[in-house]
Length: 365
Ligand code: TRP
Ligand code: SF4
Image: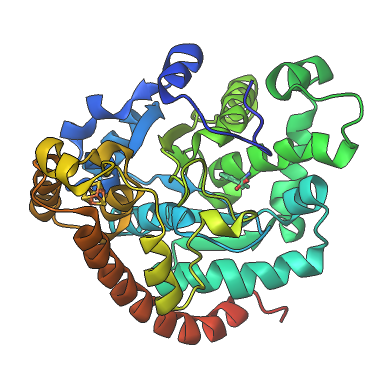
C-alpha cells in the first residue's frame, strides 16, 4: 500500500510490477525533443502516455494537471514538476495547477489563509522564478477551496465511490477524519474537470507526479471509467519521476532541513550545502584513483544529473572521469558548488521580482 501523505522510499521496480506502471523508456523514441528528465530516465514510468505523445504529435488539444500542496518550503526536488510544466507549456498543453489548500487543511491541519500565503510567497513565486509563464492564456491556477466547478464535480463523483474501495486504496483507519477521507475526491475532480464542457470537453490529460501520488491516479482512472457515459471522460494518463535523494542519503524532505536544499536558500548556503552531500567516493584517494567513484550512489552526481548539467556530453564526460578515477570528490564538489551558486544567484534575483507577480495572481479582487 502506498500512503500519499507519508511516503517513504519507494521501490521503483516493484511499482511497475505490482501496479502496472509502464517503463517510460519504451516511449522515449517517439517524443520529439524530450525533456532531459525524460531522456535521462528520471521520469521512469507512465500510464497511457501514448495518448499524450499522439496529441503532441498531431497538435491536438490536451491538458496537464499537477497540483501543489502548500505545506512548507519548496526544495530542489520540487523543481522537477516545474521543469516539466515549462516543457509542456512549450509543447502546446493547456495547464491546470490546483493549489491543494483543502488537502493541506484536511491532511496537515493548515488553515486556508496560511495556505494562500504559502502558495503566493513560496510556490507561485518559485514557479515564476523558475520560468513558468503565468501570462499564457492556457495556464489556469486556482485554490481548490475557491473553485466551485471542482468542488461540485467532486461531490457528484463521490456518488459512485464507497468506503471499502477507499479503504482498499488508502488503508484508511476508522480514526481518519472525514475531511481527509473526502479530499482525494477533490483531487480526482482537479484531474477530470478540464474535460467538462465548461472547459472545452473531453481531451487527453496527463498528470506528472511522484509515485506517492499513484493511489490518487488509480482512483481517478477508475472513477473516469464509471462516469464515461455521463461525461465522456477520456481516462487520464500519468507519468512518474524518481524522488531526489536527500543530502545525507534517504529522502529529501522539507520537514528535515539537513536533507534539503531549499529554493529560498541564499546562493552561499546552497553552494555550501552541496559540499556536505554524501558522495559515491571511496575510503581513500588512492583507492578512488584505482577503482574510480560510484556516481550511481552519489548525491552530488544526482544533483548534476537532475538539475545542473543540461548538456548530455558534459555529463557523460564527468561520469567517465568519476568511474575512471581521474577526478576526486573534492574537486568535483567544488565544481558542483560553483554551478549551484550560479544557479541560485539567478534564481534569487528572479524570486524577488516574481513575488509581486505572484501576489497579483492570487489577489482577492
Ligand atoms: N496531492 C498533491 C500533493 O500532495 C497535490 C495535488 C492536488 C495534485 N491536486 C492534484 C497533484 C492534481 C496532481 C494532480 O502534492
Ligand atoms: Fe560523486 Fe563526483 Fe565523487 Fe564521482 S567524483 S563520486 S560524481 S562527488
